[in-house]
Length: 385
Image 1 (cartoon, rainbow, N blue to C red):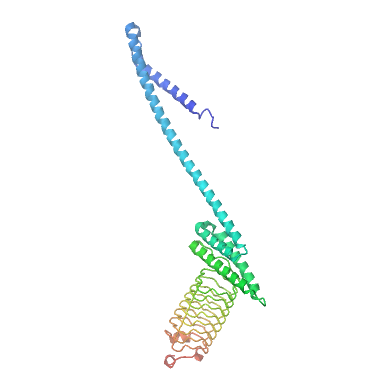
Image 2 (cartoon, helix red, strand yellow; image 1 turned 180 degrees about the vertical axis):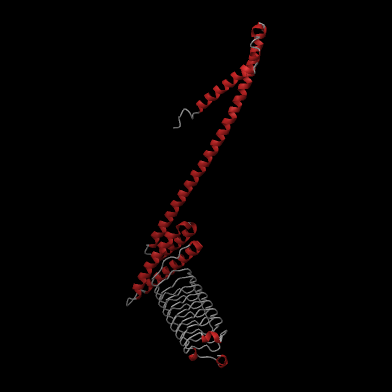
């Protein structure tokens, strides 16, 4: 309680005053002229008593004044500390109010942006997507709800688009609008992840339907397209670096000239897909179906194609240095002019494979494969076997 007598200023003053009186009494008894001349008091002339009184009172006044100065100094020190504490408290309160206002503004912006996504006008919806992307830059702690809303909106639009695609007479204008929104949402999600850096969790877009979608020159690295339906998907000169397309359907997809480094295409179906001139360093095609795939002049150094089915694929001029092709089905694959330096061919099926004029190829690599006797070699290399 603020009025507690033991904490009040009046009580402290009284306590100090009593202590001062006790000190003065002690001084008077042992050190003052009164104590010194107490036995001579009776012998002092009446004319000298007034002078003696005044001298003694002056000494006591000086002592009391010094004590009060000390008290005022200590009290001023205490008041200064209290002022500092009050100032710190005021600063914390001010900061708390600012943070509260900022949080309120952030959630207002978030609510307005989400409301825009439900508008009928495409321009308003695009504004909502851009507003969420901007909010992610201004309030990084809102990354999770922002990406979650954008992902939900993207999947919903993809579902509507899939229904339109399979109609007998789809509304082309509406289809184009939906595809613009899908591209904008994908790019916004990718940028949100990039802004988050290493702390970003890959947004879950597994099993999404992007059939026949044209994303020419679009950069969407780090996507989770696990088991996605990407039949005839187009990403010419785009970026999917570091994405997961494990188990995805990419039949007849066009990913030419794209940055696909460190991409995971394990167990994916790439039947007749075109990845020519693409960057696929350290990519994984483990157990993938790649019949008649086009990898002409692609960079596949250190790629993992273990146990992949690449029958009759085109890998002419491909850079496959240090690639793992162990146990892969390479029947009829065209490796002419490809770089196979240090490529692992152990257990691979080389029946009808064309390795004529392949670069960096050693007889030991060929003999580690199966059915190498039925492969196509240049006359010069055949003499080395």
